[in-house]
Length: 239
Image 1 (cartoon, helix red, strand yellow):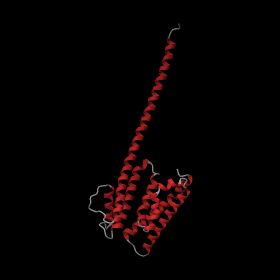
Image 2 (spheres, one colour):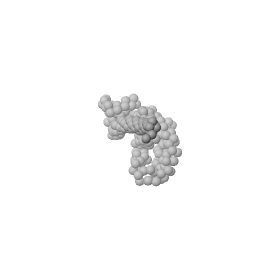
Image 3 (tube, rainbow, N blue to C red):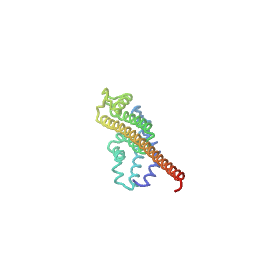
Image 4 (tube, helix red, strand yellow):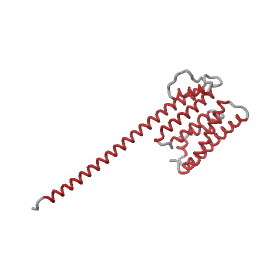
């Protein structure tokens, strides 16, 4: 849809961006959970800024080399948000969106046979990122002040259980909650749709196999009938 150049670029940067996202996640978690000072805090900030720069370069490059630029732009608004939002509030909102964008970019490469592995991995990663994000928003004046409470709240929210024992009170925390609730519903929909597609495909394959077997049986019967006709002709006395 977007040309060969962007496909080659995506293949070339897939692993570098994955490694960058992992480093980003480690630095992000260290900043929120450990709240370090001095050199460690500086290293975390450098990693976050470098990660944002890599994603910005990736976005600009893909926008430049794509053949259908307007369609690509309209379908990659989340990638644009990763680049723009840090300029408005440096490295805060971008932190939650970066890994989510990476997940969405890689889902297209997943096979249906790996749906269980992907679902478990994506769910665990989303819960971790959402827990870190809500802890970042709530720990200085909200109801969620520990990492354990944040993870518990994320599990309860993504499964749409909603015990109500913990809930965000800040605007940023509620924004994370809104995204996580939508993500939980979407995740259930993806799993349901994938399983339904797999079942329909298996039934279709079985029907095709049955139809092929039936045609083969009919053809075999025709051959046998033709042989019987020949035998009958041979056994008839000549007129």
